[in-house]
Amino acid sequence: MARTKIALIGGGMIGGTLAHLISLKELGDVVIFDIAEGVPQGKALDIAQSGAVEGHDCTLRGTNAYADIEGASVCIVTAGVPRKPGMSRDDLIGINLKVMEQVGAGIRKYAPNAFVICITNPLDAMVWALQKASGLPRNMVIGMAGVLDTARFQHFLAEEFRVSVQDVSAFVLGGHGDDMVPLVRYSTVGGIPLPDLVKMGWIRQDRLDQIVDRTRKGGGEIVGLLKTGSAYYAPAASALAMAEAFLKDKKRVLPCAAYLNGEYGVKGLYVGVPVIIGAGGTERVVEIDLNSAERAMLMKSIESVKGLVDACIKINPQLG
Ligand code: A3D
Image 1 (cartoon, helix red, strand yellow):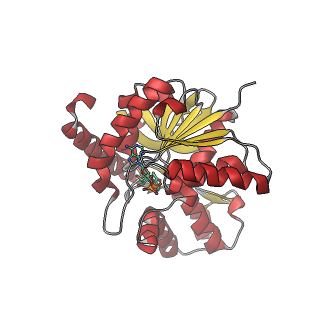
Image 2 (image 1 turned 90 degrees about the vertical axis):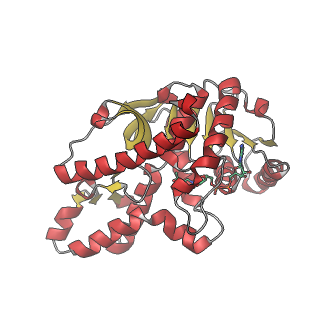
Image 3 (image 1 turned 120 degrees about the horizontal axis):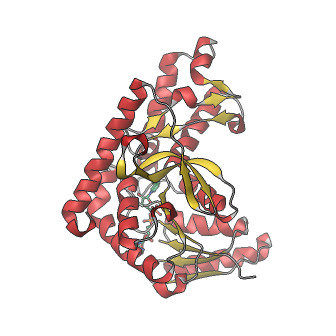
């Protein structure tokens, strides 16, 4: 039986972390593609040598040629530039749009049957551009953001309540920006919704509001601390959860940037919503009931995503 091949397009901080995690979990053989000469080769060799200590036999290869991704079941795209302090995700659009066009062409030629997970920012616009540029089916191209945003919310809640993060379930909707929508009503600790925990006196509403705000700005907090780039450990772990759901046909329900075709009243955009991921890629968009305040927040977030997509079309009208 052929071994599973996972292609990482971009071998920077997230790409390298992904390669390491994939080999530790023995999810498949890894090809790291990057335009930087030597970097993907060096990272692949370094991680391959860790196999002797960790006891895994994954094959890792670094390359500067798209032909080497041929036959990949999954492509995880981080190619492009990350944020520096003072930059918004949207400031990256000009550079990263061109990168998505190149990456899309490479995937179309060499891995047209892959499940493609985009991480490059500004996420909701870049995953849209990547799907257009690759021409792959919409259910096979998805964006990672919600799993990370949710993980941040879960972490802050677990810390606040001093409970295991395993017992915290959280829910974040919308685009991957500061106007994302953490859904308090659908977030629980031990199955108890957060508004009930406020009533029970476990947390004050203003403290919960602070945690929601910190979640929204979670990426910026790390950029401010690192100063040279953005988060990479949690983003890599989040994308891998999505890849694993596809490879193992787990039917996981995960918040992801998915193509909407009328769901939530949106057509033709990628927006963060809960989806089911299995062997068919994005198998179903889960449409939940929103109250008027939640719907208003989601609409605001969708407007920002639309603005970014319009900016992409202005740069490259052929994408429209
Ligand atoms: P970084 O360490 O700079 O890695 C990016 C890599 O892309 C570098 O090795 C570059 O050489 C490579 N690259 C640049 N242009 C090309 C190209 N045309 N083809 C192939 N490779 C190329 O960044 P990173 O790994 O920290 O972050 C990668 C991306 O993820 C950035 O756009 C971040 O903003 C984004 N990011 C998104 C999230 C989300 O939650 C959506 C979180 C964190 C980072």
